[in-house]
Amino acid sequence: MNEYILSVVGVVLVSALLTAILPEGKTNGLIKSVAKVACVFTIVAPIINYFGGDKNSKNEEIFSETVINSELNFIDYCSKISVENAKDELEKYLFEETNTKINVELLWRYEESNAQIFGTSYGERKVKIYKALLTANENVNEQKKQTLKELVIETGINEVEFVSGE
Image (tube, rainbow, N blue to C red; front, side, top):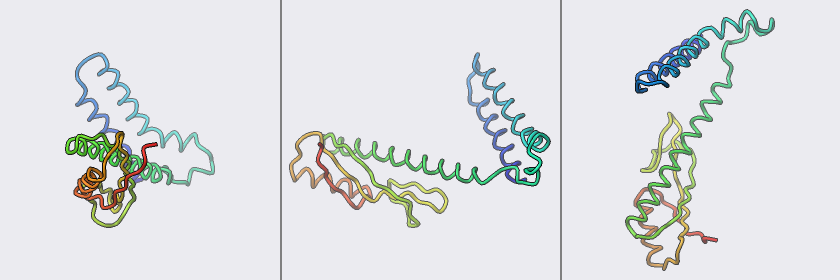
């Protein structure tokens, strides 16, 4: 029952937020109508399932555990977006500091420890970027490679490796 109430409140809040953010215009009316239909459907769906559903499924919970899996998938998606943003910021930072175009691949995992500068926390799960793989688009001498490694380490990523650009 708690899940049902939370889903109704969530849909109502999202629709209220959408209608408040959207500017006035032709699409605003359409979005408001869709939001209203979504609210009504969310409220009525369990009732329809109860009366129109399978006779054996009446005693089952309204919401299944697939919601939890969806939430974990969403957290993984958000984690990947966070790492991708960190990658873009690191590439920009390295270019600004060394005037060298570097492609960066960040290796990450979930950890229980404190998140680093380029880390994000989701409850007990923390995204930890533990290694940066750097690929240069041009020839880079050993001194510049060392400078690039030091710059990456300053950001909190402790392992840095240069890989061939092939």
